[in-house]
Image 1: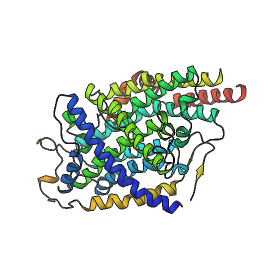
Image 2: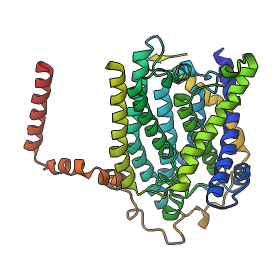
Image 3: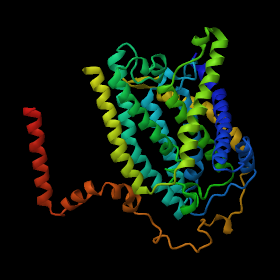
Length: 328
Length: 111
């Protein structure tokens, strides 16, 4: 059984890479329209990858080759592996009983660390500055994110003692909004807000794209990457964006359509699967595309201050409200 | 498979490794379709600095204080008193150690 699941990971990998690039294209198209531009075709990211594969794969003379070449692999594999633990509609995750939400958060960090390692290993001043900024970003958003996850898991552990509180599948089976009281509802809204605000930072998107910051440090961590190495990072970006959005969908919007239409069997799985990706796209457009079009890039210290004070306070208040809801 | 269970959390590192190993088949296929060549020993392998000459290695070395600059700047209200406490005198550090130990003992015994 486990062997069959592992074979499925290959198909899953192909699917998330495909949909990651497709949604990247939709994101670029919508962003362009919001800025009164025509924008590239939706399949432009596929053209980009094909073009990158035809370019030279330069390894700078100052680079540490094995880290420089290994970082894109690690980033892409870590991003893909995030989907091993994520349910998609009514389809349970392939390795859902083999990893919890804490693992998912750590694998997100692995993908970010791969970018940092690649940047430092480039041996370029711009890349080093970018990698340094990525580190600061990581240290900034981890605390509010951890607080938000702990609040959610704590509530589940107190409400459903027979289910694993840290399992993402539990959150899908028992949607949080159906079980919280008024205080908990308010608390969960704050927790959801915290995670939504962390999402663009986790993905390195505007207004938190300080690690790449094209106009300041010429793509920063990515400045020395080209050819197939850059293609892997490019695909990883698309997959990681999907993974973050899918995580929020699974935690806060896990509802399916099959029960509404009274479907069962393959039809139910298919409808829920499609609906899941529609929800992911909708959330992506709201939490990533709209935000990156509407805001300008923040400075490094502004980001650290923002995450450590207002957002941490938001998540703490959310946690407090959730605790009050359960105990009072 | 080896499932590590921590009371509430759980994960299986072997399953993760196998999963990523299987996924890497596809990643390798994509990667292998790309070009692997470039012009070694030419200007192409110099770091990109917008056309400026590359400074010496010591001039662009990034120190730990540079790495954490944005973070320390944002939390300077916390870091500045801490840095001020670092006098470099051993007796001060021993004093902090004894004070900390006394506080811990108090917490453990009384609270």
